[in-house]
Image (cartoon, rainbow, N blue to C red; front, side, top):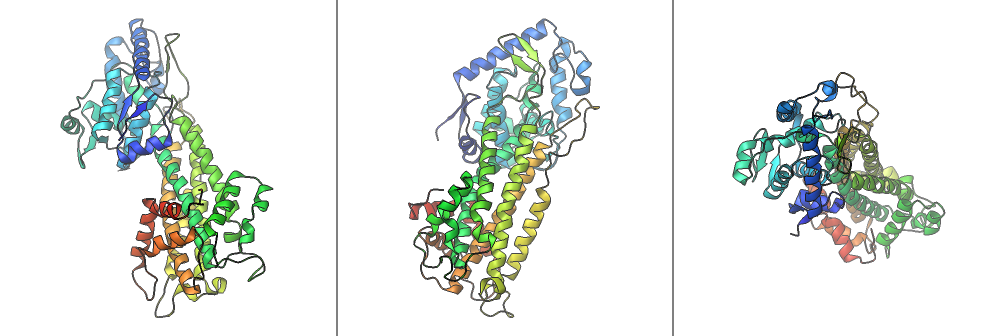
Length: 509
C-alpha cells in the first residue's frame, strides 16, 4: 500500500480511514522534519535563557505560576504524563487509537510544538509497526485538550501503560520491545506537546463522519425500497419542487431517489392510488437532505482540525517565542460533533417511521407485521419495537454535550468543551442508526414480496438482490436477529452501496 506522507497540512479524511482501518504506512515529509527540528531549537533556547514560558519552565494549569528550574524540566514532563493518565471505561477500538496517534503526529509535523524529531519518529514507528496504545474512552473534558486519553497514548512510549501488538494486549515496555521500537525519555516541553490537543475527539469524530457519509447512501437506498413497497408517489421527487428551495442536500436526495427508482413499475404517480404520501416518504429529500448538508459541513470542520495546531504554548520559530493561547480548546469541534449526532439520529428517526408504516396493516394495506399467518406467527412485530427502542435511545444521546461545562484546575480552566463526549455519543448514535436501517431494508424487501413485484427500479433491484442473497423471504417465524445481522453486514462492508453503484451506472450518490 502506498505510503501516506504527513506534512501537517494535507491530510484528508480518506487518508485517515486508510491508516486507521487498512494500516496504510505513513512517513514525515522532509519539510515536516525540518519544521520539527527548527521548533525544537526554540525550546532549547528558552531553557538555556531560563525564560518563563508556560509548560516549558512552569507547572501546568493552576501551577502555571510555579517556575521550574532547568534540572527539573525532564521530570516535569514525565510526571505530567503519569499523573494525567487517569482515563476510565472500556478502551477505544484499535482503529480509533491508531487515528489518535496519526492525528497527533500530523499536529506535531507542523512544527509549532517543540517536540524532538526522535520523539515524533517513535510515534511514526508505532503506527507503522502496529503498536497500538490501550486508551480508555472516558475522562476527557475536551479542554485543555484530551489530556487523560492522550496521556495513555504516550505511556507505551515511556515503557509504561499497555499496548496491543499483533492481537495481544501487553505491557507497554513489552509491546515496544517486540516491535523493536526503543522507548524514550521525555525532554522539556515534550509531555505537553504530546497531550495538549483535540486528537481524541477528532479521531472519533472523523471516523464517525466518514461512516455517516456512507450511511447516508444506505438511507437513500432503504427509503427507495420503502417507496417500492408502498407504491410511493414519485411526483414528490420532481426536480422543479427542489430547485425552488435549493438546499444542496435536498436537491441531491430527490435526484438520487429518482435515479434509484428509474424504471420501477411499483411506484405510482399523483392520484393513481393516492394523492400524496405520508411525510416519511414524501419528505425524504427534505429530511435526508438536511442531514446530508449537516454532515458535509462537519466533514469540512474535521478536515480543518486534522491539519491544525492544537498545542499550547505555540512555538513560533520566526520570533523564537513560546506564546500561550487556547488552541487546545475543543469547542470548534464540540458543536459540530453534537450536530453530527443529531443529523445521524434523524436518519434513524425517519427510517423507524417507515418501518412502522410497513408493518402496520392500517397504513400499509398489507398483512399485519408482514406475515401470512398472523397469530401463530408474529412476523416483524418486534422488529419495529427494537427500532423504536434504538431511536428513543438516540434521542437521549443526541442531547448536546457541549452545553455543559465544569470548571477544572482550581478554576484556572473555567470553561471546557466536553467535545470528546460529543464525538463518542455521535459514534454510538451511528451504530444504532445503522441497525435501524438494516431493519428497514429487511422489512421493505418483505413488503415488496407480499405486495407483488411488478418490476423494480434500476437502483432498487440490485439493492433488493443484495438483501435477498443473504436473507430469504419470511414464510414462517424464525430468529430474525440473524437476518438483521446479515443486513447490517452489507452496510458495514459497504457492499450494498457498491452493488447498487456497479449495477446501476446512472446512480450518482
